[in-house]
Structures are given as structure tokens and as C-alpha cells.
Amino acid sequence: MLEWRSAMNLLIVDDEYLVVEEVVTVTDWGMLGITEIYSATNAVSAVRILNEKKIDIMICDIEMPQTDGLELSKKAKENFPDLEIVMLTSHAEFIYVRTALRYGCYDYLLKPVMEDDIIKVMKNLVTKIERERHQAQLQEEGIVWNQLKPVWKEKYWEEMLRGLRDDPNRECEEYEEKQWKEEQDRRLIPILFYQYANDKAEEDIKQTRKKVKEDLGTVAGDFLLPVLSQKEFAGLVFISDEWLSSGTERNGIILKDAILQQFKTERLYEKIGICIGEVCTGREVQSMVDKLRQFAWNNVCSRRQILDIINMPKNSEAIGMPDMTLWKAYIDNGKTVELQDIIRKWLWGKDNEAKLNRRALQMLQYDLEQLFYSTLQENGIQAHQFLYDRENGCNRVTAIGSLEEMDAWIEETMGAVSRIMQDVSNLSGIREQTIYYIQTHLDEELNRIKVASALYLNPDYLDRRFKKEMGCSVNRYILREQVNMAKGLLLNPKISVCEIASRCGYENMSNFSAMFKREVGISPNEYRKNGGMERPDL
Image 1: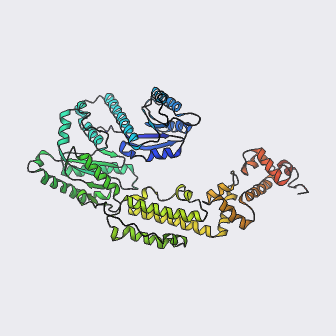
Image 2: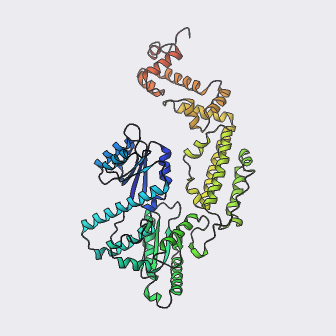
């Protein structure tokens, strides 16, 4: 069968990072066929990405420093004619719209971006791109309709399940109207197959899809496996006329049981998540698959097993959040291990068995981060930088996907908080870390703010603690170390003064000379000529 569905890459260009983040998180891009999302905060970075990556869609802000979005779009369309562009603007004036359309932009969105607006525009644009690709491939390969019929059929159901067809009948005339109406009246069993969180191998899910095809082929004659996203695909098992001859519901249940038994025998659930729905018609299948996707998304308790919609736990049941009254005291007193045990009892306890969902885990995560933030801020630590900017072994975004991942995130983050709190409580520890960082980064442009940032400390707090131990401020200590290094290097005639300035963190030779003369009393060249002797009156 011809594979003509391809992935798409998206580039978001806006000089405001928060706007970029808002667009990235506004919807499930995977359901629209977007597999990679790149971002740039200026035109130079955007052009570099366009040259290095295959970008299909660019969402670009109009107002940016230096090269604006309209000029960037014009140049991008000239160099990449197939690139589709959606402008992002605060201007509703027609002149901006007219200019954008003249440059070949597909559409525009007004800030602040509304979720419904961007989803509507992107759905239409993705559908347009896919159809153009399919038509081009058909023309190139010269394949007749009858040969492509199975491919178009699967594509039809893909678009239906991914919500790219607001009106199920809007393309009926392009294919065969009667056939598609009959398809929607057929009865079938929908199944959702989804990649488990942290299973990153894209090839694995492709191989698993082949295995699903083999397994379904042993119990069902007519089925499709439409792709929903990079990590999800559906199984549509149609109930044939032979099965229907003696009763739809009874035979549908028999077929469903046969499918479940086959998957259990092959232990397919160990490789991929499986959620099976109830018998429904083609007109109802999108709603049923959406329910399966919602359950799979919220399922944080049941892993590596087949889920049946009739046995799904009711997520509406009240979930009692843990009593956090004493949790901050545990953190302040360094009893993080004991606190982890308390949290684990709540996560894995029988009271919440099979009831916890993503929302409950996210609420727990928010509450814990609030505690961490408060404790770290009280101790002069740049909490936001420590919690969000550092390279965590566990991803905080995916941590709410399962109990195991949440447990790992809590252990990793709480351990890091505990370690840094121990360092802060040790006065000499801060001094030693500060001195070590300065001495190993003297070739960089240093100041107390940069040092404090590297140690996750508030600059004023660091200065007070360091001065108490060393008798001087951080900036003064940096200056002293730079001068001492420069003095030593100036005694080596093979090293130029310009290179010495660079090694001491100065890119500008004049600034280095002025600093040295201010501190030593003579210029670097005079110091070298005197063989390291300073002015007698100093």
C-alpha cells in the first residue's frame, strides 16, 4: 500500500518568548500532523532554521526588531515557495493583512491568540498541505483511482478521527458519495493504540503497528489502522455482513472478545497502550475514539494492561488531596526522605487506587513546587532558576503522565533541593563554591550576578555571606584574582598583553589596561618592563 501521509515541521517566530511558549502549548500539535516544533526570537535565527531544517509551516510575528515579520515572510517565500506562512500580529488594519497576503501568506491571527482561532486556521492549513502533497504524488506516479482506493479510504478515516473534517460529507463528491455514506453506516469496534510515556523510539511504534496488523488479521477480515499522531494510531475493526447475519450486538461482543484474547495471548500490551471501545457506527466513531484518547491521557494508574471502556474508572470520583500542613517543616529540617515516604503512601495507597488522574498529579506538583519555591527563596536561592532552568533528569511536564514518573520526579527534585539546602546552611560551602567558580571562569566576563546565577543564589544574599567570610565583596574578589593572574602572566614575555587581557576576561584591551593601572599604579607594559616591580609608593 502506498504511504503518502507525511509529517510536518512548524517554526514559530516571535521576539517575545512568552508568546512562543503560548503558541507551543495551545493545542495538541501531534493530532494536526505536526511532529517537530522549532522556535526563533528574531529573523536571523529564523532564516538559519529555515536553511537547516525542512519547515512546512511558519507562524511569524509582524513586529520584530531589525527585520520585521513581513520582510522575513517575503524573503522566506522567495527562497522556500512551498512554505506556508501564518502571520501573528497586534494590528487589525487592512494594510497589514493586504501586505501579508501579497507576500503569499496563508492567513493571519490577532494577538492575543485564542485557542479556537489557531486550531481552526491550522486544521484548514494542514488539510490544504496534505491534499496538495497527495495530488502531487498522484500526478507524479500516475496511479489510477482504483489502485489508490484503499489508501484514500484510510486517509478519509484519518482525517475524520483527527478532526480535520468538520463536515463528514464535504469531500464526498471528490470520491464516491454513496460509498462514504455506506462507510458511516457500518458498525465497527474502535481501538486506540498509544505509545507509553518515555518510550521514545519512533521505529518501535512503527514495528508495533505492523504487529497489530498481523494480530488483527487473524481474527478480523476488514480493518484499518489510521494514524492519529506520532505516538498514536487507531484500529477500526469493521463487523462484516456475515457477522451481522445473526445479530449485531451479540456478534460484535464475540468479535471484541476474540480481539482482546488475541492481544492478551501475544502480550501486545507490554509494547503499546491499548484501549478498546464499544461497538458503534462510523458516524459515532470519532466521538468514541475521543473518549478513548481522553481516558488514555488521564490514565496514570493502570500501566501495561489492556483497558476496556466498559471497565473504565470514573474519574469524576472525588480525590482527596494529602494534608500538606507539616510538609514545609519536613523540608526545612532536611527530612526529605521521610516526606517522600508520606507522598508515596498517598500515591500508591488503596484510598486512591485507580482513581488518580493527570489533574490530581498536576495539583500535587503545583503544591510541591510552591513549597520548594518558598523554602529556597527564604534561603536566598533563585528558586525559579533552580526549579525550571536547570537540566533535570526527570521532565516536570511528563511527570504527571504516570505514578512512576511522578514518583521519580519527586525523588529527583526533592533530592536536589535537599542538597542545595545543605550547601546553603554551610557557610564555608558557599565561600568555597564561589571561589572555585571564579577561579575556573576568570577568562569570562565575571560579576557577582553571573556567579550568583551559577550557584542559584540571590546576588545580595551571596555578597553578604561571602563578605562575612572573606572580608570583601564578590566583585572585589573577582578584580583581585584578575589582577593577580595578569601579574603572573605579564612575567612571561612570550604571552602578548592582548592575550593576557582575554585570559582575564577582558575583550577590550583599553578596559583591561585602565583596570590594571587603576589597581597596580602602572600600565601592563610598564609592569612587564619593570620585571614585576610596582611603583615604590604603592
